[in-house]
Length: 585
Image (cartoon, rainbow, N blue to C red; front, side, top):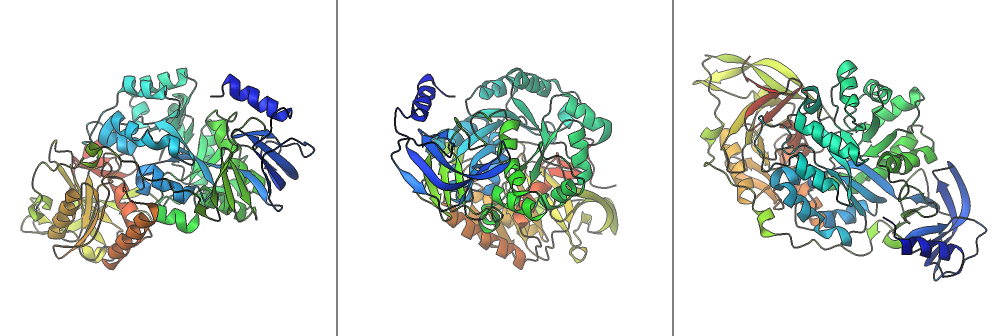
C-alpha cells in the first residue's frame, strides 16, 4: 500500500520540486487504458510512474534513449503453481523475468498440501529479494479431496482467513465444484470470509455446464482457468466468470479459445492469461505469458488488446489496477521495452523502476534461500516397497473388465475407458500392446501405507517405469510402468532422494532428479534444473513415452478433481460424482 510519504514524493517529482530517478525517452507507449500507441517520455521516481506527458520537462538523474521501442506494462500470470516448474521462487526469476513477466499470482497449494501454512511461510522467505512480484492465491483445498486421498497437512477456514490478511494475499485459491455442489460448510465459510475482505475467489469449474455452472457461480466464484472449448468459454462469460486462458506444458488452451473468441467476436475485457502448470524448459523454449500474447496476436487479436489481456484486464480482475497493469501515473514502474510488438520479446525489463533483465538475461542472479531442514525431509514410506506392492488380484480367470484412465493429448482431462485386461495367476496385467500400462499412487507421508492401483492408456510406455513425487494435489508418489519390478525400483529411488523423478528399466535406475523442497522443487539454479528435465524426458522417451512433457502428464493422472477419473493412494475416483469406485466393472 502507498504511504503518505510515497504519495507526497510522487507529487513533488511531478511538480519538478525533486528530480525523478529515470526518464525513458524516444519510446512508443502502449497505453492499455486508452488503447493507443503513441510517442512520449516516461518519468519514474521511487519505483513509480510520475508522468507520461510527452511535453513534460522534469529534472531527472538518468535518461535512457529507448530507440523507438514500445513500452509495454509488465505482464501478469493470473494463476500458476511454483511447484510444477520444479524451481524455487528464486531460481524461477531467471526464466520468467527476461520473458517480461513481472507479477505472478501463485496458488501455493502444492507445498501447502505437503507442509501446510508453515510451507507457505517458507516459500515466502525470499519475497523481498525477488526481481518480480509474488502475489498469493490462498490455498482453499488442503486437502483437495478429503476422504479420497492422504496428504501431509490440513488448512481449515480459520487458518485460511488468517493468511488472507497477509499483504501478499489477493484471492482465495482455486475451489473445485464439489465443495459447492455438495454444500460443504467449511469451504462456504472460506468463500464468505474472502468476499467480506473484498477479495476474489478463484475457480476450477472443469467439466461443469448448465445449472451446475450457475450454482457454482452463484457462490461467489470469480473465474475459471479450466476452460477447454469455446463453448465452455461462452458459458462461463454468460454467468459472470472471467476466463483465465491457460497455456501450460500439457494444458494447451490458447489456440482453441482465442480462435473461438475471434470467430465469435467476443469482448475480451473479462479474459486474461495464465500458465497454471508449465515446466521451466517449455518457458525457456517458447516463452511465458509473452507467448500467450504473441500467439493471440497471430490468431487475430489486435496487439494492444492482446497486451491488455495480460496486463490491465488481470490487474482489474484482482482489484489492484491502482498499483499495476498499466504505464500510467502513480502505478508501479513495471515496464518492458520491446522492439517488435508482434514478437513480444523484451530487450529490457524494468521492475519497480529498476532494470532487472536485458536481452533475455537476468542482470543479477537471485540465489536460492537456505530453506529449513524439515521442508527437505517430507517423504516417509510406511512400508517397504517391492514388486509385490503393485500386484492387483482378481477372482476372474483369463480376463477382466476394468475402468482405464484414457489420456487426451495436450489436456489434463481424461476419458473413462471400459475394456478387458488379461489375467494370469489371479493377477490383472497391463496390456502394453494396446498402450495400457499399470498405474499406482503410493502414500508418502508415513500415515497409512496405502497404494492405489489402476491402469492408464495413452502413455506410450513400452517397458520400464516412471515415478514422480509431484502428484496433484496430494503429492504422493505416482508411478506408471510396464513391470512391477521397475515400478518398485522407480518409487524407491524417489523416496531415497526425498522426492523427485526417476526412470527405471530391468530393476535399475536409468535416470533420476532430486526435488528436495517438499518433494516438489529443486534447490538448484534454473539452468541446472532445465538440463536435468531434458535428460529425464529423454530417458522417458527411450522407454516409449509420447508427448512433450511425460512427467507433467504423470503428475495430473492422480488428480481427483479433473474428470473423468483420478487415482489416489485410496483407489480410483469418479471425479464428477466425487467418490471412490471399483477398478473392476
